[in-house]
Length: 85
Image (cartoon, rainbow, N blue to C red):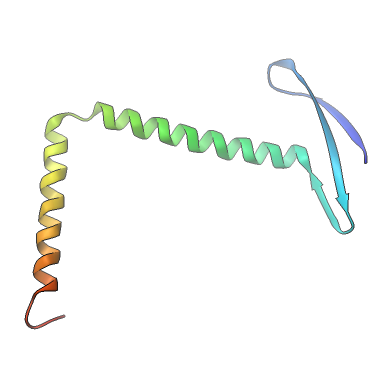
């Protein structure tokens, strides 16, 4: 195993190793980078979603409830129509 060292975020030392298993060659640095990027994306998305929910006023919530009730009524009419689609 070849051992490499790299300076990480905020100047910390990160020891990286290359793992080999017969034909499988995995670079841990690339895997960790991809995983941390994915995690940061998911966290950012959740935070933005929570902030958008907090920023909504009562009127927007009332409109959403009315739209959902209308969609439910339309689906009930389609489900119970005698002609059947």
